[in-house]
Length: 290
Image (cartoon, rainbow, N blue to C red):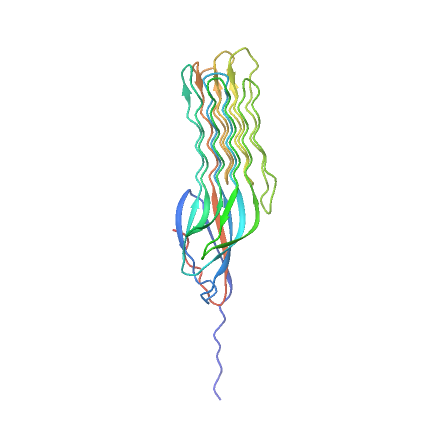
């Protein structure tokens, strides 16, 4: 009588891939279950934070950038199809301005973080950049970001939870700058506080403080720049909005700065992407996005 031999069953496993740097990569979905059928990946996306605006030349503090959005979802993918991943860049802070008169520079909007194929996508949008003030008017905070999704033949989405980014705070005329909005917790995301309004030395000068950046689901907004001068005319920049990373503090206006200078806004926080999926029946984990 011959002996019976059995090959060991291949163990199930879980693959995880993450992208931390801003930019675009592609990924070919492997045959995760060794059956050529569509399957779900669980994905987390954080959009980039918006940049704070710079101050005007006098009395117009910069506004804070809006916070980036967050979303967690199950996304159904098809083996052999090529998917595009993007991680959103941080929104840039508005550049310093000088001269009498001069207007504040806008912050730029944070980048979108997404998975897409064809016309289908799941996106965590980036926070909106703050608007610079005109003349002696203050800069205004950027709007917090939302999520958007559209299904197509090889992609469909089931949302598990999401959180929009929070709005940035307005710059101040003298001491009236406001803090950025805060984001409450969702799923495993802890929530975060908006950036504090910049401080202002109560003096007779015509300088001003920056507004705080809006928070994301995970990271704080950057604080508004403080007005630390006692006798000059100028203003401080607004803070950047939170993304996966925290927003950057707006640039302070100090007594060593020249007259008629609007200091730069802080950059937003960069986005992030991570996803997992199970392999069964000897299925493939494939390769990391590249």
